[in-house]
Length: 66
Image (cartoon, rainbow, N blue to C red; front, side, top):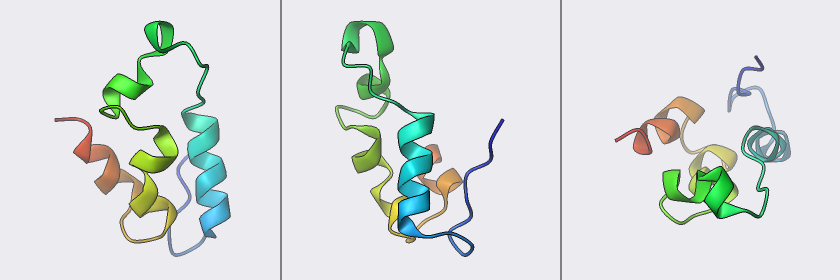
């Protein structure tokens, strides 16, 4: 299991690549369900604050566990 890059030790592009690999879009929403988990957003948009370095991966993830 790969751990999310810390915002203090990574670039925005490294964090974006992590999100893309962790939550790949397979273009079959009935099969995947990620869009439902992220309330109609793709993963990059859902994790925008993490990618930009504003909030940690865990903080953003917590938004979608409710």
